[in-house]
Structures are given as structure tokens and as C-alpha cells.
Image (cartoon, rainbow, N blue to C red; front, side, top):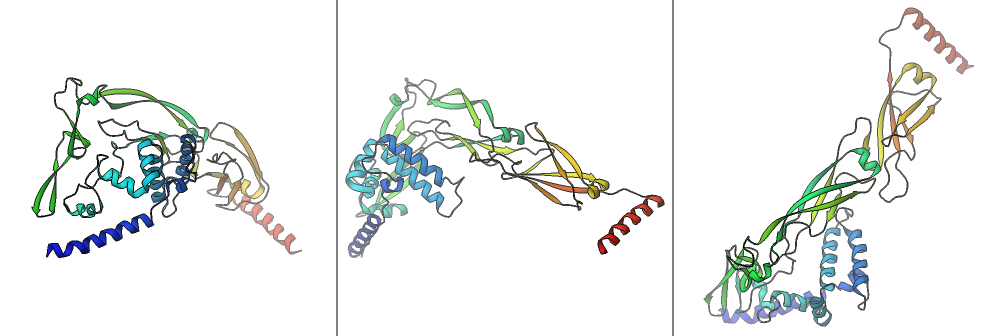
Length: 371
């Protein structure tokens, strides 16, 4: 029964292979460069594309997937070995090379069934993703004044760095499929091999194992290091935005270091409320000013003072827009607006004489309007 099914499976696998080639992404077209582009041109194109599709800035549907494709294309085209394979055999050839761990043999289309722990006598599937240590996220509390003016902050970050001679403590081990993962193969039927995943802390990366008690690194795989970082907070940055230091997280043998992210946390201000590039403030005015007009002064976040005048009657909860008095725009092109909401203070009580005077004034104004 098994032997009859294998030609059908082979046909399905070939169809999958055809579709994967038909829908393969052209890495050069993805970055908007020619195949003769220099490394400098590739890097410049990557920066522009990654900024355009970064999930923190582009909320459109599919932007995150596009960003991941751009990152993978950049990784391939800046690696001489991977670029050569891609130029000669395309993305499918590159995937097969990665599945074999760059050592030849195994792989092929039969690896589709490795998701279920089986293969047809070939090698296991190698994931194409780049192995990295976990990213680190640290909240960065900022006042509204700091975000208005911009700021430079010096910090000290403690991380784990690799032993200087760590490579001398590594040995080849094909069964290692990643950090802490070892795969053993068991034949359960002719032509069928089951893969059993096991936990093994000696596996530090795909195909590599750490030699215990290695003299080259008597203190272990890593040591503690303190590094000084300068955080540049651009004026106008918003809460939730990230300031990233690439590959500054902990190091581990066989893995690329993850990124360090400082996430801006906006602190409340006693005077202003912020929404994007706009600022809001509430101002109380006495009834006499609401009726007769007034001039008010506001002290801005940077300490500057400016005044504005209202000559007309101001209603309760009236909102006035002051153009260009909001937060700096992230684009560097001007400022948002400031919106002032007026709350009118009414007197707790009036004397009979005051009531009569107010009634006379308002009635006279009404009669004049009728004339």
C-alpha cells in the first residue's frame, strides 16, 4: 500500500516545487535595485525600504510581511555565499542549500513531510529563519518637555558577551538542529524515518555542539560586559516609538545577537495633554472676561511665553485653535496646533443691585439689536 502511494506523493511534491518557483520573490526587484548593485547600494536600498514598511510606522495590511521579506532579501544579498547561490539557482536553490545546512546531501522536496516527523530517507528540514538571541525591550520614561525639545541620554547596559576563544570550544554535531535542540532519527518502516526532537543544552546552534570543560573558555560560554550607549531622542517623538540598537542584546555561540529596543513611555504633563502632534490645554476665565474679552499668556513646554487676545463673547467649553503651537512634527516640517478649551467661572451669588445692572445691560443690548 505504501509503495503505491509514493508515486502520487512524488507528483504532489513536484507540483509544490513548481508553485514555489512560480511565486518566488525576486530579491533585487523587492529592494528596487539591479543585479549589478554594489553592497553600498544594497544597504542604501534596504534602509529606505525597511523604513517604508516598518511595522511601527506602516500599519497597512501586509506591511509586516513585506518588511520580513525585505529583511530576508537584505540578509541574502549581503552574504557572499548566499548571494552566489541565489544568483545561480534562485530562492528555491537557496532554500535547499539551507535545508542541507550547507553540507550537501539530504533535503529535496520530500522534506515537506518532516513537519510530521517523517521523511523518505532524506535529511531533515532546515528552517530558513536566521537564529538570534531574544530581543530586549526597555521602557524609556520621557517628559513631554523632553519630547518637545528632543534629548540625548547616556545609559549603561549590561549584557552577556561571548568568550574570546569561544570558537575553539565548538564541535560539529549534525544532530543539533538549533540552540538546545537535538534530533534523533528512528526508522519505523522501510523508506520511512521518524524524527524525535530532544532537549540537549550542549547544542548551541544548528550543526554545532559546545564542548564541556573547554580550556579555551574556563569561565563558560559568556562573560558579563557593561557598555555605554547614547540614546538620541528626536524632538516630536511619540509614546510607543522605539529607539533600536541592532545586535546589542546577549550573545550566544552560533547565534546572532538580538536587538535592544528602548520604548518611549510618555509622562503626563500638569498643563498640556498630547494627541499626536496636537496639544490641548484647559483655561478658566471669569464671567466678566467671557463677556467682554481678554488677553491671556501661556508658558509653553520650552519656557517660551506667548499671548493671544479674544475680543468676542466666549461661551462655556468653547475651543480655540492656535496654529503652529503644538508638538514638533516628526517629519521636521513645522509644528502641530494647540487647542485651548475655555471654562467660564460663574459667581456663586449676585447682589440685587448687580442683578438689576446686568438685567438692564442685557435688555438694552437686546432692544438695540431689535432696532
